[in-house]
Length: 339
Ligand SMILES: [Zn+2]
Ligand SMILES: [Zn+2]
Image (cartoon, rainbow, N blue to C red):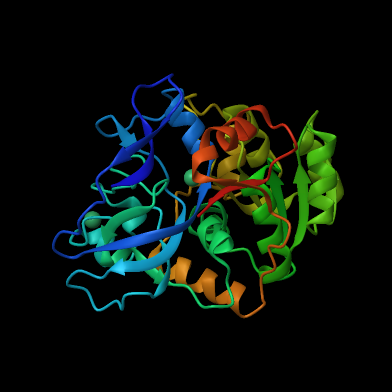
């Protein structure tokens, strides 16, 4: 038997249950979990914003650990691994093009099936990415989602060194975006957030300039002499997406990562979208190749994420970690459960 953090009903606090240790099926691997991030998506699950698989369900979709039972895979027992936040069917056109994140049969452990806020988790062998000794387990865990998600969005945007990027929403995802844009891409970065503390933190993470959110698009256009090359929306608010699009120069691209059920409503004339050849695109999760690349960037010292994990909890204290994220007490960036 093992301990697992289980959601029994939407709106109820998750419970620490004793459940059987899961057995790997064909093509699957059992991983002994060493670290697993708690994320805004866990809060959404708790409050019914995001639908889940059948309940009760073990939470946790941002894990790293050590291969415990390799099953029929080529992985060695004891191998250090990060686990991709989701995996596709492995057979459809999206999966064959390394775009499992948009597979119509995408499965996210911790949302669609039992996840990794437990001593062990079982996932398909192809969901694993090797984690070098130089990357600690907590960092490996947050790479899988909290860092990989902005990394994929930045890749999709096509921004280049010297380009100007504006990041809307300077929470966990937005701060990681700032770090990647500065350290990996070499872009000029403008951060936007209504909270002064969040703007201060973005400057500490390398943002070149920050603006508050009263009329950010106008401010960004003035600061950049016409608009940014790329804008990113990490808030999950249709009004912010509208501002993000309006902060672009001609030929610019807006990439939306924040999730909300609100309908998109752009307040700019359609003629401006056409004449400016603006692009508006969504971005979700990341590819397996991108996660492996990201692990390599951190292992090779190209991306320093020191300071983004602000809170660490034991598995038994999961609920305290979740509350930290809900209340924002202590200004959490990333909250990680360690075992
Ligand atoms: Zn997440
Ligand atoms: Zn697929």
